[in-house]
Length: 270
Image (cartoon, rainbow, N blue to C red; front, top):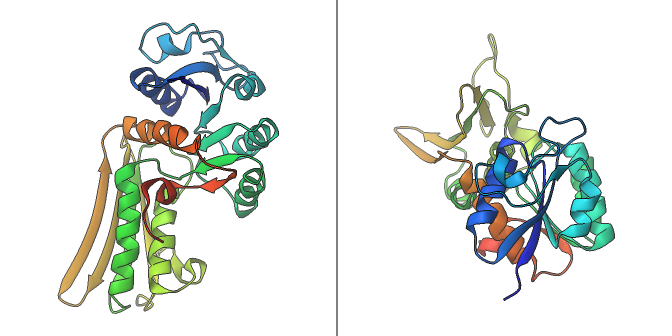
């Protein structure tokens, strides 16, 4: 069986190194190209050596276009603006693009949808299989429990994370809003400070924690009178996200152009 040639954008970052390790360990795939941003100290290094695995003969360059030229599928966890530009490269070359970038604006999401009309693109705010099952369960729970149950979403990540709430927390909010049959932007409550009065019925609240090296913890709390339902997921290693991304790259090779997500790959019903 022919190997799937994979490229990694942002190969020197925490997630980039995790992706490199996962590619090395996974059968049927190989790393053929890797890039980083201009002036990054890892430029010129071997991607495998940097990630703590064997030397792969793949040098980290600042040429992301070359990554899309060399690979059949490109994996990326980076910044929104860069991701949108790279989606354009994927579309121009007909390359599969697996994206774990969070913090995209509505306009940037629309740009991904436009690129996906020309090539298969897989975008998931969280590549964990377990988290995506959590999202599906949260939607079902919200649909089954009316707004006598107050919904709060709690997330905690490491101190280096720059966006809040996390992409996964927003996905959980969208799921429970869908289960309730409401629009998230009309019921989302992201800040509470001072004398704010009683909680408004039907609100979906967010609480954000940052600190240490926490990989990612998410909880959906449905609190009613005399009872509480809590759904939770805790990530203890970034390798779960890398494993999901590589699995997505393999799955994406058999798909026509379109914008896909974890529910598509896992066969979770809408």
